[in-house]
Each structure stands twice: as C-alpha cells, then as structure tokens.
Length: 350
Ligand SMILES: Nc1ncnc2c1ncn2[C@@H]1O[C@H](COP(=O)(O)OP(=O)(O)OP(=O)(O)O)[C@@H](O)[C@H]1O
Ligand SMILES: [Mg+2]
Image (cartoon, rainbow, N blue to C red; front, side):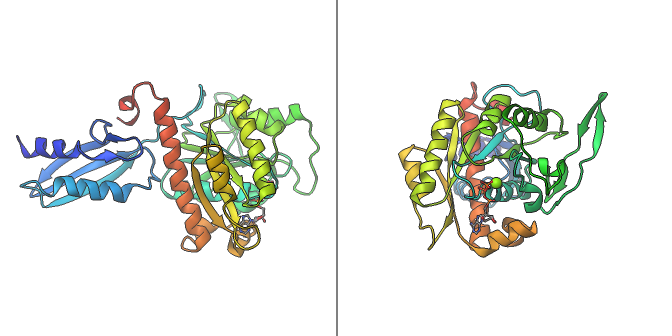
C-alpha cells in the first residue's frame, strides 16, 4: 500500500466525537499530501468556531505519526457551515439562532452581542438582528449608537444596508426610530417589522444570524417563528428560581411552535443570584447546558460602552465564558444541522 493510502486508512480511524463518525467518510479530509516525511492536509470543519481542533490534532497525530515515512503532521483548517434551518428560506443564510428567555433583563442582548462577535472573530459570516423592536439595545452594545442605515437598490427594489461592527452585520429598530421616543406598536406592526428585517435588509451570505428577542412569550417570538425557519432557540436564564420559571415557559412556547431548543445558557452566576438554575433547567428539559457566565462589572461596562467583553477582555472570566459558549453553541448547531440532513453529510461538507 502506498504511503498515501496508508495515511488515508489511518485517518479513517479518527472519529469526529460529536457526529460519531470517522473524518474520512464525513468528507472532512481534503488535499492530503505527503512530502519529505510531512503529511499535510486540510480538515473541513462544520464551523470555524469548532471547539474540537485540539482533539482532531491529537487524534490525527496519533494515527499518522506511527506510520513509516511520516514524521510530521501539518493541518490546515477550513469550515463549511451546514444549513440547519427547519424549512426553506430564500436567502443565503445557513442558520438562524434566536436568543430568548421568559424574563426581562436576564442578559439576552448581552449574550446575543457577545455570541455574535465571538463567532465573527472565529471567521464565521455573522448577522445580528435586534428583534426587540420596542426596546432595541443592540446599537449601543455594538458601539453603533443612533445612525440611519443606507438604502441601496437591489434589482429595482430599495433595501437597507446593515451596519458593520466587529466583523459582523447589524440591523435594529434603534437605527430607524428616534431613540428618545417610546414606540407603541401593536402585534401586526411588530410582525411586519420583524419580517422586513429579513426581507428588506441586504444581509448577503451568512453562516449564522443571531436574533436578539425581547423578553416574554408574546408577539415577537410568535412573529419570528412564523416568519422564518429557525435553526433553533437558545434560552438564557439567570440562576435563581423565578428566572428559571419564566425560562421554562419560554421552553414550552418554543416546543409548541415547533422551534428546536438548542440549549440553556446561565447568565449572572455568582453571589447575588446563585448558581445552577440553568443547569437544572437543562437537565429537566433534557437539553444541552451550553455554559455559564459570571456576574461581573466588565460585562455591564462592555454593554454600555459598546465594547463587547468577549472582544475587549477575552481573557477575563466573563470574556472566556462567552467565547467558550460561542464554540459550544456553534458545535450544537452543527449537530442539529447534520442530524437533519438526509444524506449525512457528503453533500454538505464536501
Ligand atoms: N454577566 C453579567 N454581569 C454583569 N452585568 C450583566 C451581565 N449580563 C448582563 N448584564 C447587564 O445586565 C443588564 C441587562 O442585560 P441585557 O440588556 O443583556 O438583558 P436582556 O435580557 O436583553 O434585557 P431585556 O429583557 O430588557 O431585553 C445590562 O445592563 C447588561 O449590561
Ligand atoms: Mg434585550
């Protein structure tokens, strides 16, 4: 057997832990070359925010280095994010992730912002949509303030150009309405505003669209679920019982709307609100626990100053938590997307 065939055979013993299949039959190995004892190849991941790079690195080394003729392994990384939408969408968006909670003020907008900037930092193409039409906070948290979006012509139709910050695209009602005037809108108007944020904004190709929802289990949640096929919703809760009660209601609502739940994130863990409520909820609903963010002043400051902590203080406990959460959620989205594919996953990763 040629050294190339031996190497391929060895790589087909390397298992992708979340999909539980080998990386060769998953079509993740590309452009394998062996020259002067160096085996070099590309691994095509299902997300650029893959938390398993080190695992692959170790497993590929362990499989290849024992072969006669290979002394070194060189891996290049690439990613091809599979489509995880529950239905058809006419736009080139691979995944739509709603960030929700039953209760107000638990950190949905903070999580949406930090999640989106972390995914973008990994190289993913990301959009952040502020679906909190009545109380938009994303412009402030993204450091964009109040500005009007540009309008551009697309095939004779006027569309809005989203703002860009921290490597991602952003749209919010905060760019369209006077920041000091409260908006008093009824359900149908909310519905059309959310629809228009999809249809009338030039998003372009996106791997992930993160949607920041308002609190509660009402019109906006319903509108979103009815307007576009979501990959799923992630539930944010504070650790304490009353927050968890509201988060539980949100879980039930998404179940009724047939929106898959991606998992639970616990925010503001620490002395004041305690710890563990999010994990308990995840267990109770048999959902993945995506991660926990501590209650820390730099998170709030980052929100107020438009400097997301995941970017400006990546090594602080909260910054690290957000980045790990972004990776875990991206991995979870890939698993959900792949489990929907009829033919796993040759036509997706290839
Ligand atoms: N982990 C944290 N540590 C400290 N402060 C936080 C943390 N998470 C969020 N905050 C702060 O708590 C406040 C509420 O957060 P945020 O606006 O993200 O919540 P929300 O769930 O989106 O609220 P609403 O329901 O009103 O939309 C903000 O001032 C934010 O900066
Ligand atoms: Mg909010």
